[in-house]
Length: 162
Image (cartoon, rainbow, N blue to C red; front, top):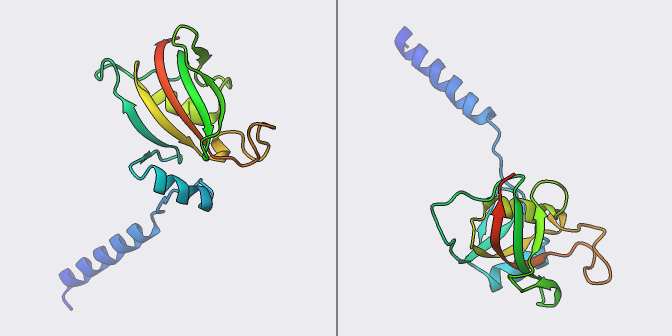
């Protein structure tokens, strides 16, 4: 083998080793297997965030070019919270009396904190929240059992930046 060929071989070997050493970050599925089957059957076109939230945009933003709410924003939200079987456990449907909460300050479940940072004013989503991004192993008895996957229809009525 010529010195040039040896250098190319050494370079290719090094490149392959470097690529092989790079970690592949496959996101593990956060939905329990039985819940995943229900979600994929009932809502096959959901988008998925890298953290495991799933969502469908039901209504586009009033101004699609506007910025998302972002961390620290005070949000006004109307919503309906349901279990996977459709049982409603909480809701506020009147846009004149929405839920008001600040994003990223521990006032909301983790799934809402993430979703609201991505939503734009006037947007309505169907949001599917894995248990560990909702109430986890403790649940919120009696309405929400332990390790429950939650489904929300939520509309970001308005928000104010901090």
